[in-house]
Image (cartoon, rainbow, N blue to C red):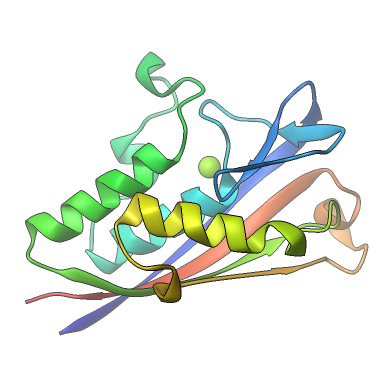
Length: 158
Ligand code: MG
């Protein structure tokens, strides 16, 4: 049976941090703040996959109080979500995600992001959708105070 999961994440943009989205380091004066590499896109996708499994969220498996995950590359979290899927004899059908960022422009990096996400989840690039939009200058995203991402995942479970 096919199960759908949803994920959402947001991190604050601050000076002195690298900006990493979908495992791609994007040149920008600010980066996302967080305990791990703060890759909001991979975090949203991780929650979508865990949600499809009916599992608890990323913060349950990888608490931000655990020094093991300090500055951790978020592909580790996706790999764990994929491992949990496999342990149940399931397989990931597809993932679709949207990054919401006023700046920088995300489009040039989307192909590389898809490749990283597919590799971390152990699926093909054709199973991964990544899109991006601005927030039309409105709210905290429009003021470039943070970047958000949302995702859905479809998992086929026995
Ligand atoms: Mg996060």
